[in-house]
Image (cartoon, rainbow, N blue to C red; front, side, top):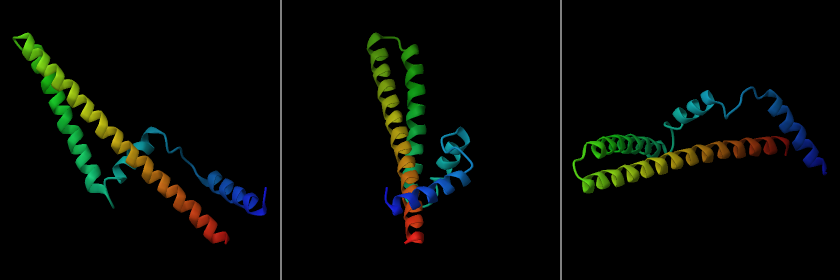
Length: 120
């Protein structure tokens, strides 16, 4: 190990020891999700949540209609619409979580750059 690697390991272990919280816990997730609705790129994330709520409404309505439909054809149509709405909702949730992961990774890279720059 080089001197730089040893020094970097010491700096990061000090920072990790000072870190008091798990970013994966439930409250940390919700805090991060709400913070992502402000700042750069927040409009897309807000629209994604709007889409999630719209597709959830379509899903609930189509499931209800599927059970009260009078013909088999209408049951199939409403069932297919329910599957499509559920798939669209899942896709938007996955995109949102990927955005959260991207933001967290960017913050960690910036933190590492600051540590390296302060020692350089």
